[in-house]
Length: 76
Image (cartoon, rainbow, N blue to C red; front, side):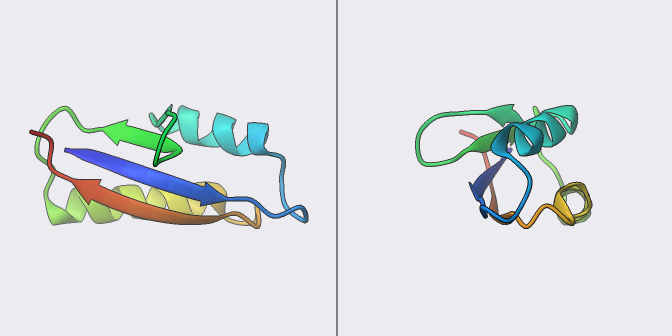
């Protein structure tokens, strides 16, 4: 499974490199294309694990004035 993030920045928030550092420290990888970051589970994750990573993203980005979209999909 993989969890993808799309991130929207505000000129009133933290700089993009700070957001990048925070998400990389959580295990996300920066990617190019339709998404900005991906977390590769390397296995199937259950709903509670997916919710937990969402909670961590929320806590990590709290106060940054960053908006994000999170999407988890199964890998082939």
